[in-house]
Image 1 (cartoon, rainbow, N blue to C red):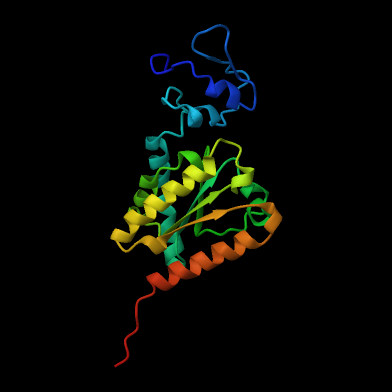
Image 2: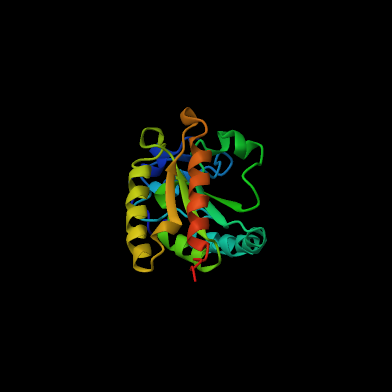
Length: 208
């Protein structure tokens, strides 16, 4: 959006594919033939002058609605339906279980261009549509490829937990910093989260 662009140049310097150029002192130009759609430019733009199609709030919200249909199948099997929001820059896809498709039918994965753009409202929507728990998978701070991405995401997570606490839903959300250096840690964390959600959903049995 040329009307919003102030020519700060952040998008030019952040692009890992050199797909954004300045021809003169004007609005930077995106070379569509070189663009890989990573979303880095849209996330660092301070004036929201760049829009990454498919990653706006509305399309992601629509994806959540479509994916929520899977929750019935998981619940029929006695499993909690878990939604994972995953930063596309993270090492998540390098994990063995992900590559082998072993996470299970009770796990739904939605990629975001970066955890920096994580919208807490999406978690509230996912829970309202039938997901029993939501986990955000982000990069460790030292591996974050965008400026302060993990730090900003953690601030959003903190604000989200404050809101969830008001509705007694704070245990339904968690975050994990994924790194292939700690093989097996994600599996253990996810399994622990699933067990916690299961215990929350399990009705209390009162003795008579």
